[in-house]
Length: 258
Image (cartoon, rainbow, N blue to C red; front, side, top):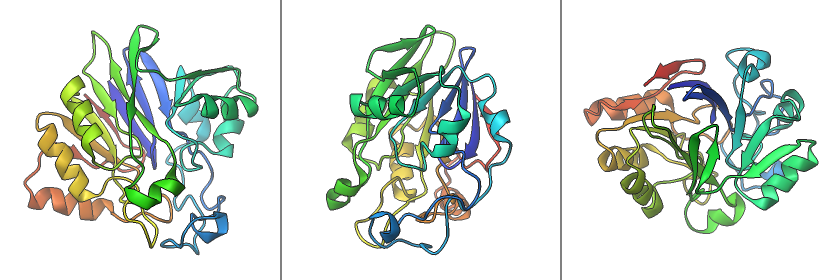
């Protein structure tokens, strides 16, 4: 497989001969409002800066070329934005986490949308919807439902894309059950000024390392939207301090083959 980090949680996964686009945020730099009070959310870091904070590393046409299916783990605008809705062909296969999300995507004109299940099969690739918690405690009221996905195929290593989740017991259960050899975690430690982390921070990543010491772990969802809390350099320093050798922190535009 090849995993190409685009920006934020947007990745392109080449798996068993198919290309999956996951959580496309394709807007040009600075064209979306910041997360914070202006969009009905609590105060946040950098709420004077529009999202995305950085440009795409390549053109939208390059990103969506030859995509076989799209997976949208939830509908927050840093995972599914108007630019993605405009750019993607309306006939493309899209998997979403719930009937409600499917309906909203269909309302944007997409004709081939399906709820991701725990036993979904696409072109002989097994796609397994996994649980996630987009924060802890009270902040979950703002964050809403999310999911991740496990990929399985006889010719490939098992891949777990965790999505917007913190470390909690379900992530441990997913690792124990599916024994993924490759794991992608959203590790920007994004948060508002109240409520704590919405996605994994460095301590959460360390829990993943301990749960899956033989897996290769890729950390994404970093530095791209205003409420990020963990930089790539800080995570790399933490990895070095802990003598961790199986965590990769790609720059936007970078890809890894496993």
